[in-house]
Amino acid sequence: MLDWASDAWTWFTAASSWAWFTAPFQGQSWWDIINSPVVGAGVGILLAQRVGQVAKERIDAEEAKQEAERQENLFDDTATVEPVVAREIVSDAERADRFRRGSTSIRKLKMYIDAVADRVKDGRTKRKYDNIGRKDYRVITSALEADGGLRQPVFKVFMSAFEDWRSYSNGQSVVPQELASRLERMAGEYQITEHRPKSWTPKSKPTTTAQVAEATPS
Image 1: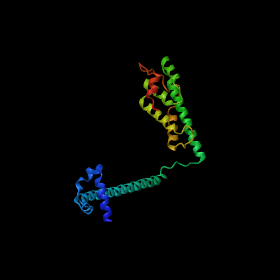
Image 2: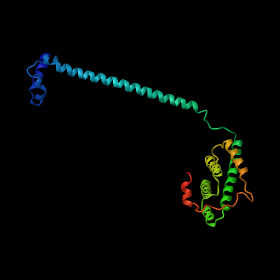
Image 3: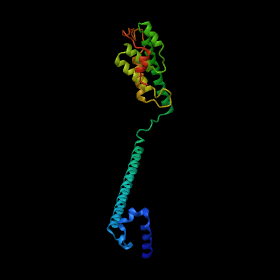
């Protein structure tokens, strides 16, 4: 076995292309080379690298395990919370009644906003309001507030009402009892009479339709 290795080494060192590598070992036997400090140092380096690699693999595996456990715990926590935030379950009759109350009240509030727009003492401003679509009443409400037709506190409660109703206007979701009651109270407070809302004069520089659309939340 050693004779074969020695012959192979002799052939290897004879190749000119490997001269740069074999020069330090010229004249030495195969056995001497194996036990030389250079080979021993090389083996030591390889072992150290492998030990470091194994240690890193273990750390990576442990971190991956901890992350998996964290995600699992998060999922469990979310599942535990679900019953608390579950949708309110009501009878069909109650569902229909809440929607009726809410939709009736919101229609009255829209009529009040239209009355404010109709009682402005300026033909040009009134024509501007006539050209504003009524698909989203937040647009005309914002225009009235910007021109001085609605005071800030009143503007805020109307904008809140129109915004909150958007999620329930199609009748697919159950209207919260609190929202239905709040809209009813508002409709009772803001009723159209001969003197309410009052006629009003817009600011010296009324806003344009484009400015109102820009300022209205989407």
